[in-house]
Image (cartoon, rainbow, N blue to C red; front, side, top):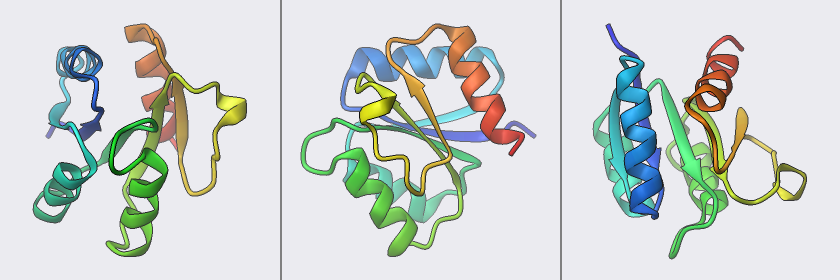
Amino acid sequence: MAKKILVIDDEFDDLNATKVILEKENFDVETATNGAQAIDLLRSHKFDMVLLDIKMPTLSGYDLLRILRERLNHKVKMIYISIVPKQDVDMEDIDGFIQKPFSPKSLMEGINKVFKK
């Protein structure tokens, strides 16, 4: 059975490109453009991984990560995907980081590395 990944990004082009890459790699992909949508999806579906943009309106990736880990007690693997340089990112409670813009190869390397943890 295909692994299920939730991609959360407010930039439609980035969201769509990520979805296309993952579907070509035979992942089952759901998308959300904001934190509220993501929380609803995570309450009603089981995911193997969440790819999470940091810079989003209303709920940032940091806020959403905290909500998911604390309130929803989610143990799902989570990776930040962001334009923010990694050295400027708070990596607490996150499983990985993929720098935007990314190639299909670097996206898959980042995902596979976390799945192997």
